[in-house]
Amino acid sequence: MQATITKDAAKATIKLTGRFDFNTHRDFRTAYESLITDPAVKAVTVDFAGVDYLDSSALGMLLMLRDKMSGVNKDVSLTGVQGNVKQVLDIANFSKLFRIA
Image (cartoon, rainbow, N blue to C red; front, side, top):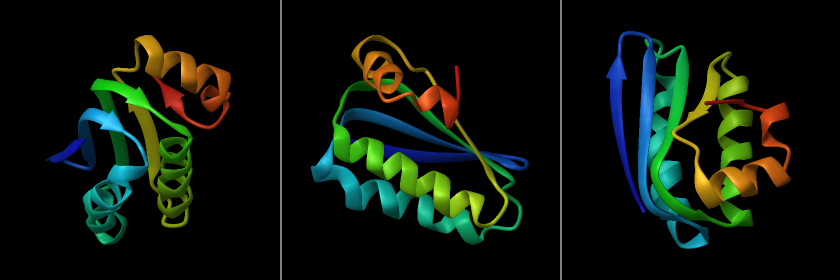
């Protein structure tokens, strides 16, 4: 997995590509850590358009992101969710925890 961050005013987007699984947890954490303390960022969107696979550890990483961002009053949403990724998020009821588009 590769994670690329772009910022547009108060919104940051983490664009993921490839497999989102346990082997990529450090890369994902590194990608979002600077956003936690960035006072200009008020909302974070995770773009899944380039992700074709995620596992249960990826779900845990998303929950960790949500907890850390909630702790500093920042919104987290998920976009580009499709195919198998959408099925996994639906089964895990993530639509109750995140705004998903």
